[in-house]
Length: 300
Length: 174
Ligand code: SF4
Ligand code: SF4
Image (cartoon, rainbow over all chains, first blue to last red; front, side, top):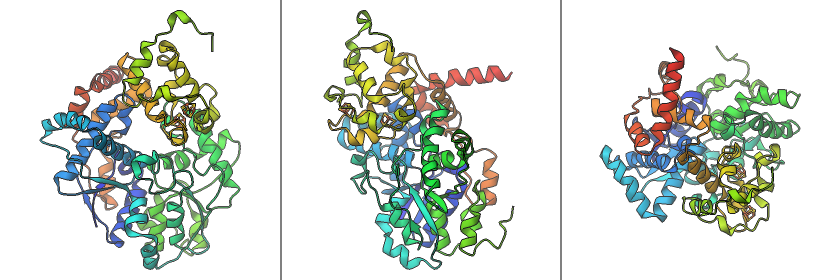
């Protein structure tokens, strides 16, 4: 299984724990990742200003993978996934639009033919590897650990661009993946499908903090060891801004926020440091102690 | 909201929205309010209401919509779009409204700043010195080659927005 590995902007600068753990887990599971140094921003941050510019950037990235003979991209960020896949969707239904965009790509000696499939790492693990296969590879079951899944928005929605691979209103893929590690997942909790609010952080921070905090407030009562998510935006909001949310809601949450490949990494036998635990701002100390991994104090 | 000034209603606005990718299906809206009930931003900010924004567009309230803060407040979560019984592509429509505002010279600073960063680095965040840190923990270095991205942005009018911000930042630093 070979995939072009699309990092985007946030992961390689603010989500090193995500990238590190994703690479480790992929290697262990026989997923070959090809780095393409020419990859840029996916185009998402530009779309509000110009959809055309954003989708041209997306097409350039897709064309770069295609040029190397790769027909699959694996992403880590949900916004990248959505933008690249939305571009695919638009091109498929509107060949004129693709032709117009290719006019621009020609300047770079590129042309996109529309053959590259885009999948988020969680979808790759769930669909292409499979929960059973993962279960077989687990050498260190995370028994006793209890997590809640945060799916975020663009991993699943708009569902029409994702062939409805999971139910957008009541998804199970991430819960299934969490349980494959031997841990328990809180399958149902209020506002499970709620957006983190991250996209408007720069427009009206207080609204983002209120949106994010409302979910943390609910989770506080669910006795979880960590919130498990799959998008660097969501992590910046729930982990990076948790202090602000605590202030807004006048309470302490202290909820560790982990990327799914970090917990899968533990289950596959990696040490916490190998999958970036010391890069997490809110330390998952209780979890690691529970799993008997807490003794080696994480070196600074 | 103040009362509607019928003098200022501009039905060509509806046409402009319908002719912008993402805005095509706006007239299908039958005002059920499912979008507003699903909206996480609406829950915490009364001023933002997708159903009302759609209604304002359909009434031709061009200035009120394009000059408002609320066009920029959609988080793009697609919860509304997933549930709209009329199949209005609301998330795409919100994006279309932002693109139209930009065409008329209105860009929220947060998005202009993002455009400036992408123009500078080809990415939203500078990698720069972080490459040393990446290498130290066993991750590959990432080259920063923004030339092609700059070309795309220049050819689509985004470069202008970006360069204005870059110019302001640079003169502010002097
Ligand atoms: S959910 Fe659809 S039909 Fe209902 S108010 Fe919103 S856009 Fe209109
Ligand atoms: S996509 Fe925008 S309008 Fe729709 S529910 Fe999300 S924030 Fe609200």
